[in-house]
Length: 151
Image (cartoon, rainbow, N blue to C red; front, side):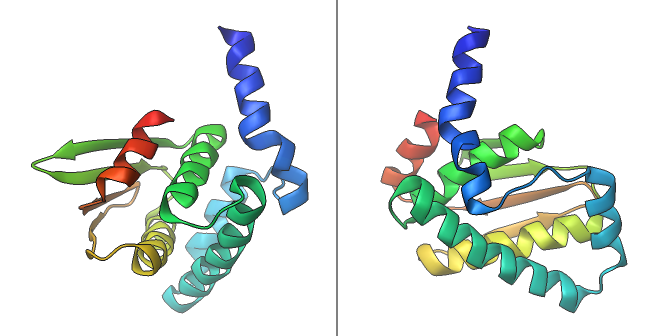
């Protein structure tokens, strides 16, 4: 089972890591950068991350849609050691990202997810932001739900 997990991680994420320009980066340094940034700088970081994400999805998933972006994000948070979850509650999708990296990281995550959902989803998400997590509630199309639950 462990060998299967290692092989899946390699085929799903690692083989593209260098081609898309992802490098290992200490969590403490990233937290420090985000915490010293003002809100406008955090938005700029999120815009840059959004552009990077779109290009990475095209390279790794060979398509550009919401399911592909969410699959890539799900894989990224998994290999980064960031906790995440997706449940359906009262007919709505609830996604949680728990990072323990400070409120600016939560604002960055909210901005990035806002851009993604604005581009690909009709319904507007509701966000709850804390110092260590972001909760997103929205209604995803069933086709997208199926892709998220399959991975």
